[in-house]
Image 1 (spheres, rainbow, N blue to C red):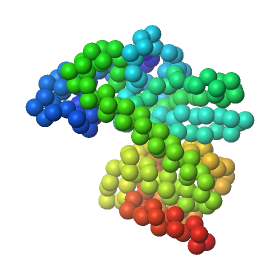
Image 2: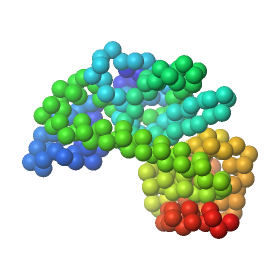
Image 3: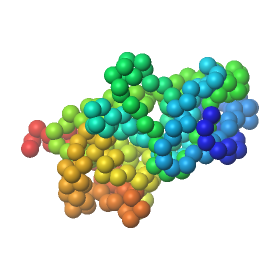
Length: 244
């Protein structure tokens, strides 16, 4: 394991959606039984997360708080996957073919984060509530689906439209609705955004300025973002590709 111990958490209190599939009359028992250790991880590179666990029953880390980036670099060109609360991650996994091609993966935290440790103890606890393992696997599959979306996003010719769809996704997953739009409390740099949509940073900076001038987004002084078009229809964005 890596990081500093920060106590324990009842998983169904931290992530109520994990109770899906557990029969209602068993949920109170499950809430008391399914307990995991919490690790606090500082901002910056997360090299310790790349160390393989000793137990084959170590399922991974469930992100409770914070924003993680997984940066893949090929021939000097970065691609970033953004992960946050609700994601189940196994940072030490890198397929051998990728290693053979000298593909590197770097994990970092944008800000201090907390993860629940889903280890062999959790496997024992979950024996009475096996459906929770299915729900956790759903998190892994959902992550793969979102990565597919990110790959497709990079095929859209216009960078401003890529950014609009990206911000719509971020608002859907981690946005907090307020009187001034959807607050995305993640400090994403122009470089981060460029690596997420497969574009060069200068062009992304220009597109962000144009979107801000249209009152669609705003970057706050602390580096976080507000998206003012959370209700925007993704199909309308996609339809506009052929119109211009």
